[in-house]
Length: 284
Image (cartoon, rainbow, N blue to C red; front, side):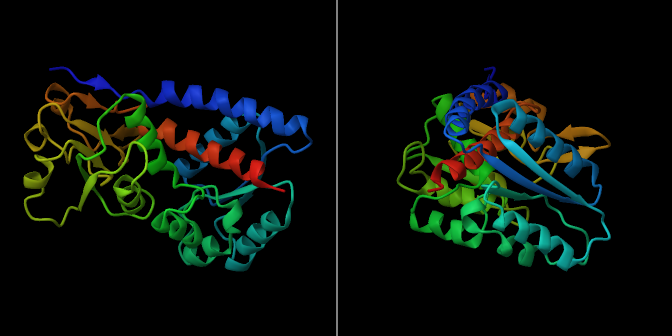
């Protein structure tokens, strides 16, 4: 068996074409969608991530308001940028790039973002909406994974999904999302982590595995069920090389798998752009 690749790059391009049409309609009506990005310091991965978002904003017609502060910026200086974005009617959504430098209270900064402008969908207000099943901006990576599985008709409803990782950005919100009674979700969800004894005993029963552990090769061929789907959502690096949570030999055993490059990453960015356009559409 050779797995079908879950091509996030191809799907993301189609989503961006649809978003470009929506952004153009807004602009024609006098409201160009605006995304405010705040980068503090010069972490190479963060710098590149923001650069990619700015490039994609231009690609679909979203105006980008970018602030880059030095790593020496104080808590007050960082919060002042967030306050300015909140007050600016041309900024409909806000991205605070993480991690922030040591000594900065990230939680306090994120709480300061207006929930209506929360492009990441991770503000406590919006996570509360997710828990309650109330419409709101969804966390980008979980939303992208659900869309990717749906695009390739991977059966999820009523199936067993195992998520490796319980982090705020992927594991926890993805578990909530996939367990909800909504299209392409409604699954039985098990969340595990690297401290779980005999993780493989749980993953072998999974119809879908999503690994967001950030541990290279943590999912091996002996841990998966034949014919299942495996999504690598964790990121780690060896030098400049991006490493997958999924070992190479897994592709010979499963029916669907994400590629090392071009799987979840493009979908995360596409969902962020969707949230940005949606925030502009909701302004009255």
